[in-house]
Image 1 (cartoon, rainbow, N blue to C red):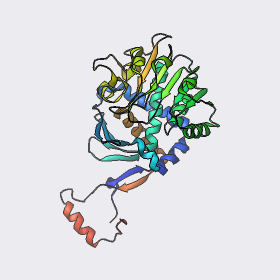
Image 2: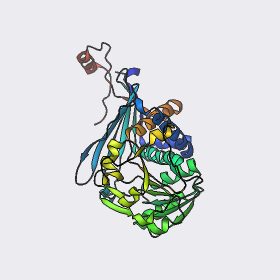
Image 3: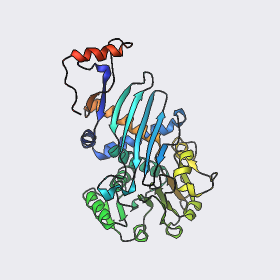
Image 4: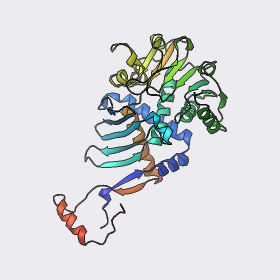
Length: 355
């Protein structure tokens, strides 16, 4: 039996995603992601919003991140297991789905490990566009794991970053990042301590994987006028910054109800003042308001950013065909006769998938 067109759903596999990224180009993908995320942040109030739904264990977390704007519905499945790299596995893997609210039918199934790295970097660069010091050109990248190159390239693409200063407690990770960034047009400086890395940096990005209350940056390491992009703290009990930094900073978040559970501000009182980033992007509230101000984007990743990324992939696979079509949905001739469809398949000429 041949599946009908209604039963087919485009699937962007890892191979398709990589082909799509190279077809469009990393800088253009990042620019388009920033545009899509900005557009959705400007209509923030239209979305269903909830903190991610997590199942925590001693070794990591598995989460669902759902949202809808009333026309489309999206969710991402994502894990976070910091010790996976010891077994040659990724710390974070993900896939996502986008559906049509009017029918409930899926319109896209996609890998989101690669896509999450891109959307996280695009969100960081989008925030820095509104919060970083004017003309910022040097970034310290503390934590040189799987996210680091994406972060650096996004800042280069959106802000014109010209130099990145790398540090990781694992020198092999730093060497990997430096090698991957060679030829990118960004000057790379390998540093041997976080203190050395932040020298001369107007932007400090922290992205470490340890699932614990860490102090990657101590209070005296962050001076006036910098922008801190804290993206490593993303679950309860996991932080990167000393509380004193938070006390001296103007803090911007995605969704406070989630960030107070998972972000750097989990260290602070529940009513500690923060500014929602969407209000800055929509022009409702100011971002950086003084040259000497420390701005801090306490980023934990939110479902609307994944929704934006899935919207972009949906549009790009329609244009480029970088996908395969999956027979995911039962589509009987008579929608009330699912059993009849099953029985007709018994005598139909078809070859089941190998299992």
